[in-house]
Length: 185
Image (cartoon, rainbow, N blue to C red; front, top):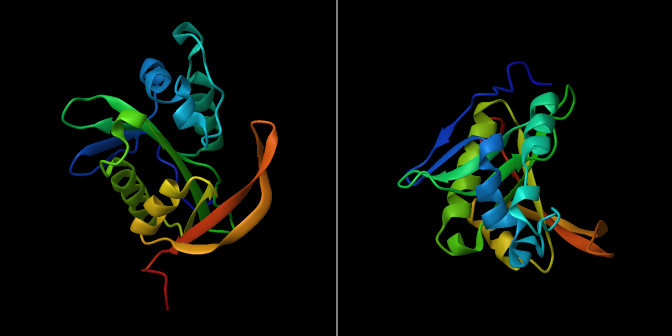
């Protein structure tokens, strides 16, 4: 682990967004914007939840804290509404200073630049915390997610065949990366 990498109270502010630690109280908003929307879940690896009373982000919150990984609620600064989440999917270690990021934004907020704004800010945050390389991937059919990664300056690295098993089938992933410009020699 990179020394002082994880700060459980870390927040990121952009012009329109606040990325703050995901909290148990965010369950209803995550249910409404992600977990109960089959369009969002078409490519996001999370189960569909039928009823709001079954919705909880407690497991995610606890897992991220235990593993010392970031999981941010994506909040509109103007209204305070939680519109999605952005999380760290892998942890850096002594030898690999790489972190993978994943994200999901509610369908009502697609095509407004929020996802790009959140990802770009999270990449900069990771670099400031000592990460050398940030990676992201998307199911190849989810080309909109690839465009978000490209807008954030990420470089296409290639396809991984049958990388994920989701919705009872194997999916190829398109993989992207960006290097910390302060580390380039």
